[in-house]
Image 1 (cartoon, rainbow, N blue to C red):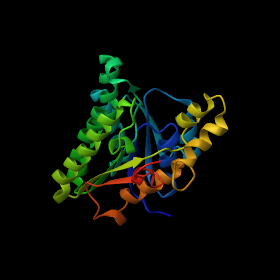
Image 2 (tube, helix red, strand yellow; image 1 turned 180 degrees about the vertical axis):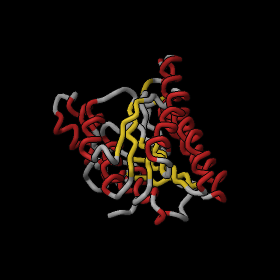
Image 3 (spheres, rainbow, N blue to C red; image 1 turned 90 degrees about the vertical axis):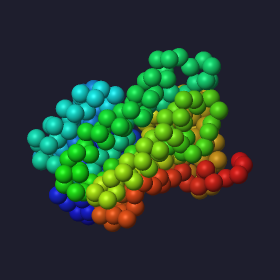
Length: 256
C-alpha cells in the first residue's frame, strides 16, 4: 500500500475495464486520480464516489480534441497542483478488411488510438519536465506485435503507439521522465464480454479463446492495472522506452 502516496495520476478512458481497474488500484495506493471519459458517464461518477470525492475527479474530454485535453490538464493542476503519472488507456477498436475501410474509420482510429495519446503526452510533458520527474504509461496491444487478418487498421495505430513510446522515452530520459507501454492480449473487459454474449453460445466462445492461451484462462483488467502501477512507481525508475506484453504467453506460440 501507499506506493503512489502524494502522486497525481490522469487515466484516460477510465469509466470501465482496464481504465477503471487502474483508477481503483492507483487510488488504493494513495494517488489522487483524474478519471477521463469521452462524455459524462454515470459509471465514472460512481467510481469517484467509490474512491472518494476528495481523492478523485471526473473530466469529460475526447482525447482526439487537443483543446479538451489541454483543459483537462489545466483542471488537474488547478485541483491537485501537479501531474505525476499519465496512463493513456483511451482507445477504440476499428477492425475491417483494408479495401473496405472508409476514410472516416481510418481517421477516427488514428485520432483516438495514436494522435489522442500524443495530445495527452504533449499536454503533460511540460509539467513533468518542470518537476524533473514523471511516468507516462501507454496502453498498446498485442496487435502492436502480431497481426490478425481482418483487424485493420488497429494494429497499424498500435505499432505507431509503441514507436511513440520508445521515441518519447529516449527523448526525455535524461530529464527524469519515463515513457513505457503495456501490450495486453485478451482481457475480460466489458467489451470482450459483450462480444462473447453476442455469440450463439457465450460460454463455449469464451472457452475457445481461453483454450488458445498457454495458461488456459483469459486475463483480468486488474492484471494490467498492476503492471501500470509498477511502471508508475519509482520501483521502475530504470525502466524506460519499453513495452511489456501481458498476454499469458499467447504471442510467443509458433502455431496454435
